Length: 124
Ligand code: SF4
Image (cartoon, rainbow, N blue to C red; front, side):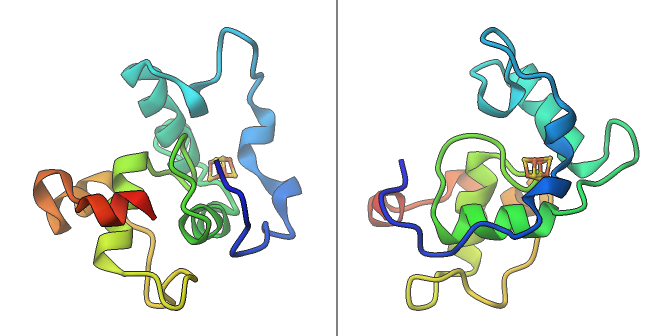
């Protein structure tokens, strides 16, 4: 739950690739408890499924990182990967560290192995 946005949404949300996904009451891979569906959403964002990376993946991830969106798939990353990126690139004055860069699940887990966070970081 985001009570106060630290960063504004991308101006080009209309280009979001996920607008093509038919979300239903019973199917939403971007907010799923099913690991297979979650991976499906990650692969969809990153073009692993069809060779087409979401054109606003970077902006999507920046929005999620800056606003600490904990749930769901954003910018082709899982919650755990976003936590790893936040650890690797700590927020700067509440905003996402400008040095951050998109990274794969594998890279994030390698960078911050073992699950990642202190409770303080998780409570942000
Ligand atoms: S990167 Fe963000 S905007 Fe793009 S398809 Fe994934 S969730 Fe949607």
